[in-house]
Image (cartoon, rainbow, N blue to C red; front, top):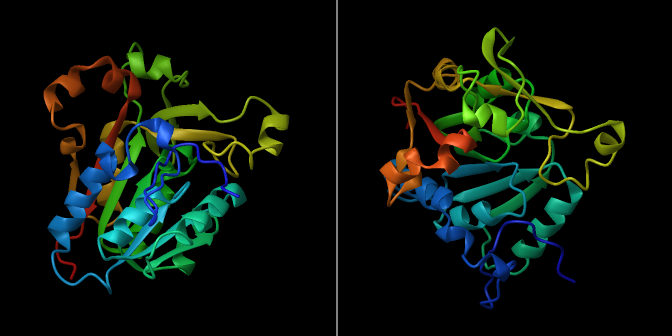
Length: 260
């Protein structure tokens, strides 16, 4: 029996799709395409020994695509329902270099090190993002890709209001805004079923964008950038669009230039 899929429309080996009603495959998603371009750029040769981690892998779509590129890929997710979907997919794709682990991503050190770490849709669900980046810096030999929401300093910014973020605050010594993950204790107790929420923390801290970039650098990545081609082919239009301004979200990349 096929488990439920909330977001990842993955092509299986028999040609069927896991969530066809979405209308596009996960490999066609702009985030996936951007991540693949970055991986292609930094790891152009033999990939069977290049390890890639997909943190908070949800239903395994990105993990599958990285494995299809030839990388030794591990998807990590804490929720039983998500891992059930991942294992369903793994059994239906011919990818011996693909594996999944049910674990809290804070335990990444037990699974590493990795040459590249991909973190999409997870980072903004953490209450100690700087500490987490430091942990990733110790586990990533070369590349870190973080696709995440962020906050801004402007109190009147549309994005801060759209997500009901707190007034500007300080956490871990840097500015940002708090986001409420659960409405009450009942919601928190049922968090296994809330597949797009945090796990142990009831509030999350969205770093102010400038300090997010600084935190990636402080974690040991001497090259830090926002990967705007994730908005291609109409980069200018997307940056000016309401979706980007309200979304407060981008793809941030850290590279260790001396690695490998």
